[in-house]
Image (cartoon, rainbow, N blue to C red; front, side, top):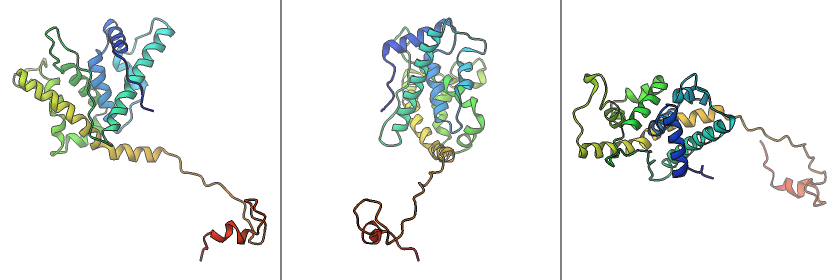
Length: 231
């Protein structure tokens, strides 16, 4: 069963909570989670939750903690499910991009959240960053993440509306490609962490003994007739 994505009302509730702390905005959280899920090196909640609301944060009550953590976990699982789906069929994950007062979704917060996730595991992303043929997948994220960078040397040229729309389209298309890029490492990690299957020990049955299936015939003339012979 696919994880149930958050409803609009639940997204609004999570956004209001994050805005009030203050913490990562919902859009940044979405990008941050997307990067962590793509990353082949697992990041545990104990590592990423303090990045969302700081080391010293405390919930007002156990009920609030249960509610918010449930929303966060469900949102993580929904993103993971959507990205996994891209391995099996033509599909993209549509990120949470909040519109400004002018009705325009700029994508800066999402891109900054994504690049923050990349910085959480720099060694794991080094392979992609050093891949001359694939590093372009990160260009739209970098472009939007640094659009308003305090360091003028890191800012890209001005982004007009048409260029922004193209950058957002490329960002959305790049995300499943990045996930597929790291998929062999995800699969290898899953295999390494899976326990070896244990064979069920079966008592040896003599060929002239009654067949354990209960037919009343000798084993050699019943189930044993189809048993493989080892040479």
